[in-house]
Image (cartoon, rainbow, N blue to C red; front, side, top):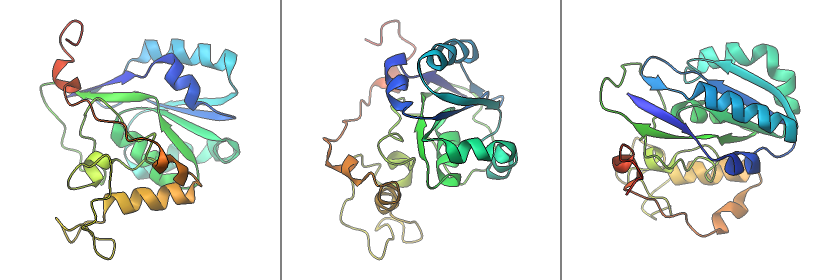
Length: 210
């Protein structure tokens, strides 16, 4: 199983720039989603920001299902400056891939929980690292899209856009570069690398994370 945890209100408010379309995924049976907390936070956000729509669905990680669910909202999506997704990492990546031209941000971090992980095959993956990088990398996960899980890519070993570890795999950091270029956000790569806190998932069940 896995659990999605909302980022702080300040962090989410800083992401909701301009007209913002919000997508909640109440998840599948393998995912815990903080429904009440998300509802309360988004009500507060709507009073302070330009939230044009709050759409709540499940299984947004399925591209065909996502496309169907977004169909009647596409006018608002196209008009939005930002799409804020509150779901596990797979859901955010699926939305970011579908809405190539949009700034898609994650409102959650994803943590693992012991138990059944589900069997639904997905093109994209979430390592449940508890420290979502998707907001810095254009919605392409550096942990799962890069064979070396580099957060300061690229390593320099790729050739013709292919990974040196797996030649059938696209270089994750070239994907990140292309996506940021498309969003006109290449300046993001000039910012200091956010060092990954490896202890997060393992200390999640302790009282104070110590």
